[in-house]
Structures are given as C-alpha cells and as structure tokens.
Amino acid sequence: MGVLNVTPDSFSENGKYQNHDDAIAHALRMVDEGADILDIGGESSRPYASPVLLEEECQRVIPVIQALSKLTSVPISIDTYKPEVMCRAVEAGVSIINDIKALREPGALEAARQCNVPVVLMHMKGEPQTMQNHPEYENIFEEVNLFFKERIEQCLQAGIKYENLILDPGFGFGKTMAHNFQLLKQLSNFKKTWKMPLLVGLSRKSLIKKALGLEVHDSLYPSIALAIYAVLQGVNIIRAHDVLATRQALDMIEALEVNVA
Image (tube, rainbow, N blue to C red; front, side):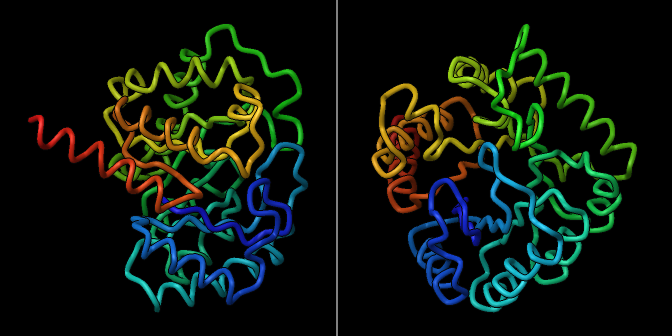
C-alpha cells in the first residue's frame, strides 16, 4: 500500500504533494514501482496534529481520487475517519476505507455499511492531539485484542460484512516504543486470533528514531526490516512510503519461500 499524503503537515512528506499534478505524478510512480493499493490522506494523523475541516479535506483528496481512478486500475484507499469524506471518496472512485478511528465517529458505521467496501479498523488510544501523552497499558496485546473484538461486533451489528474487515494494530498511535515492539512480537497471534487480513504501517515511524536515533529521511532500511518482519508474521498489507525498495524486499522474501517450498 503506497502512501500519498496531500497535506501540508505530514510527518514524512511535509507538504511535498499538496500540488495536484505532483500528487498524481507521485501516485503513478508508486504504481510503476509496484504498489498494489494507493492510500490517499487529506488530514495528517501525526502526533499533536490539528483536525481539518470537512470541506478542506474533500478539496484536497477528491480531485486526486477522481483523476487517479481514470489513470490506473490499482485500488484506491481513503485515509479518513469522517463519514462524509468516506462517502464522497467512494463516489469518486475509492474502493477501501482506512479509518484510524475504526468507525467510532458518529455516522461512520452507517457510512461504511452504505459504501460496502473493505474497511481498515485501526487501534488508537486517544486522539492524534493527545495520543502520545504518556500512553499506558496493563497488557497491550489483550487491550488491542479487546478493542478489535468490540469494533468487529459493532461493525457486524451495523450490517458491515465480516469479509470486508481489515485490522491494523496502529503502530505509533497512542503507544510508546516499548508498546510498539511488544505489538510487533504479537502480530502472528493477532492473525491467529482473527483470521482476517492484517495491515500495518511501520514505514518512517518514530519508533525507528527512538530505537536507532535516525531521522525520517534516514529510516529507509529500518522501515524495510520492519516490513519484512511483519510479513513473516503473517501480515497481508504493508503501508509504505518507499514503495520500490519495499516491493523488491518483499518480492525477495516471496521468491525465497517459493523456491524453498
């Protein structure tokens, strides 16, 4: 899943793809590099980020979605928690909803049911503005698992199909470095527990800086290492900023497994 942030304050691109033509060019480049999905976001979810108004978010993402849906057959995902944006994005050509709030916003469950497309349910403790203010867990695996159980039940009660659900443990969202590493070691257990697609976003995350002292622009190799580890634990979808390098690394892992088998 290639990441396209059309925001002025993304932690990784810092407004690099705000311009419509630049955004389209980068998205198509990611497709050429091997992206299976394009994930478009119009509101930064980095720690302490401020919310964006509905219309402003739509103005950022809808024209890009409309253009890309005509230029590529690669599925497009919308990274949003607002039900109105979900609906407009699906009308514009989106086929996956990626929600950092796991459909907890008022109206989001109904919007997802009406849209009838796959939905990513991500775990986040708190809100982007507050999530990194001393997050605490007694047992992070059990707490995230309980969160997934509650959200899945709510989705099914709302009429959302089980086969349309994808889970994301939410690395970096209301978690310390230790919490993130504990979750990494539990990825295979999440997979065994839920037997549904698992998505992770580990690319350029702050846990790399905290563990190795590297800035975002120096985090390519650690990001790839984390992606490989996640896939070996059974993760199905890797959300990545550096598509070509990640694609090649994962293709090598796949080739190894095929030839060994």
